[in-house]
Amino acid sequence: MNIVQIIPGSGGSFYCGNCLRDSKFVTALREEGHQVVKVPMYLPLFSDEHDLGEIPVFYGAISIYLKQLYPIFRKAPAWFDKLLNSKPMLKLAAGMAGSTNAKGLEEMTLSMLLGEEGKQKEELEKMVDWIGEHLKPDVVHISNALLLGLARRIREKTGVPVVCSLQDEDVWVDVMKPEFQDQIWKQMTLKAQDVDAFIAVSQYFGEVMKTRMSLPDEKVFPVYLGVDPGEYEFIPSTDKPRAVGYISRLCQANGFDIVVDAFIKLRQDPAFQDVRLVVTGGSTQSDTKYIKMLKRRLDRAGLHNDVDFHDEFEGPGRTDFFRKIAIGSVPVRNGEAFGMYLPELMASGIPIVQPALGAFPEIVKLSSGGVTYEPNSPDELAKAWAGLLQDPQRLEKLSHQARKGVEQYFNIHDHAKEMIGVYQRLIGSPEA
Image (cartoon, rainbow, N blue to C red; front, side, top):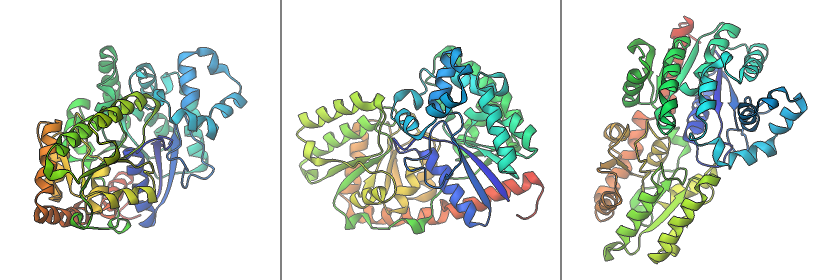
């Protein structure tokens, strides 16, 4: 089967769960014997672009932003577009706030959903022409529902089914200006008619999006995220120093300040004077003041030397991070549809401590690899950490359960087979 995956990139400036999700599925599908091509949008997927080769980045972030705001750039010569979409320029854009934050991008998001009726119609035609000419797919898989404006022209050009993943679109849309939110949800609901199937990353989020986009049950297929357990080094938490860890973009929405405040609270107890905090995940320019503020807070608490800001969050650097921590938490303020960091942590034998929000209770219950707490406050998170750190037997048990839970429920190879089953159902093929 020839599969095309269209994936918006982050440029490698921060831990991008969606990029990682799609890339891991691509690898697993290839290992099942299928030909899969990643087509990036906006920014490169990672800082080193991994296996993209000569595939262009469509809808270059700088180019489409300028064209959206200033009509004169829509008539710019081809060489100018090529310059804006060059690797150095896109790397620069990756670290800036405007390319990765929803606020301020309302009009562009709506325009993208309008597809051939939007201001990026020329980019759309470039993409579908290139896919049709170079790739000849059997199925095209779009990374998220904010890209549904692509679907109609892709189907018309290629004549093949279009599949769309569902993960945290509500997080993006619901922070936008109120006057745009209704318009965007209406367009997503309308454009959903151009898609043959939706892949929800959890049971929880499948139900959320059925309601918000009026999706019929038969069109939504829950397929969990996963990892290859063999790629992760299992070390029981009790064999490591007592350290709590955070792995995600260092920002307010992901609750990085909740982690910092919980750590300060935990260290006020003499029983936890040896505990360290290790954080990784990168950031964008818009997070700089926020991070500095939290570093000053740690300084005032006398804990500056007890926090490890682990810079490398890709490849071997991420493995080194997992070796350092005994417990992992990413207290996303409003919960999440899944969270790619969860199977990564658990595969490494690291129990997860998550707020009882979004899909987190579903994942913890299924894996038995962690605990949930509520409300999502520093005090409650500190209590949850303390409960595990002062009970080594329970911590070791959860560590083993976390690994086993990933092997049984969040193994990417099992979910790749599920995904292939959906594709085959759509193209009417009993086998690849």
